[in-house]
Image (cartoon, rainbow, N blue to C red; front, side, top):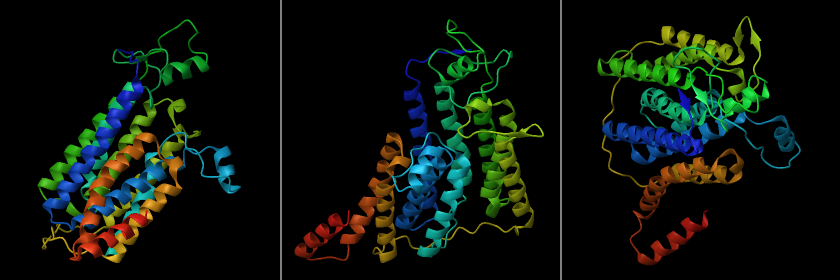
Length: 340
């Protein structure tokens, strides 16, 4: 199979956007179904997205940009993304906000579905764009990329093809391998969820299965397709060692964590007045966005705007809810706007 797409960036951005939007719809639906306080739940979702986006770019920062940061010359420029580093920053941030808001509901269970599902969707964009490509193969389902794709350029750079060859050597469609494995993970998690098995361990199970899947697909992925430089030891590359460590940690958690049924807390979900903690965290998020602009691509900022619109509208409405006087409402509006 040969992939010849004139504008691969468009398809990559399309699937990237679709992965996030589908995930957000599921998360919001889950919160509504289980009667989560909507404002707090939206704050947690947005917090997860912002810190995941920043974290996913951290390992992709080059040495020159880090030197600029140390010298106080501005934030570094990222050259790629890393899923693991995104999770390492997003999870603590979400747990911190959960503690600050005293959010008494489970926050990671729906992510057990949205994480592998989002990856499966996004990998189709990676397939079209030619990033995350695999090793050379002579199997009948190998994929060749035309001139202009990353795999073609890397093979030319390595001397595997000449200037006159407009197609790359066929490579493993690793993106399809990983996407299919992620869909299998989604099916397993849904099976466990519907039968109420391991309900308090779904996120650990999902991550454990994904790290195993990623460990397997790394055998078929070209080292040149990674964001970070790789070293191999005992035939296993850096990413696989990281996957192995996290898999063992999660396996320990799964075996030691006490199994108990999931209790869906159901309380009155009438919208309450906004608290100082909620408003302060909202302002903090905006401040973080403004001070870390180079950690976001234009598309990531657009998606951030999409998810911030309902959150901002809800906060604005709750900010006005206790105010009855028109003059005071106008003054409140001015204060709200000046906060930005």
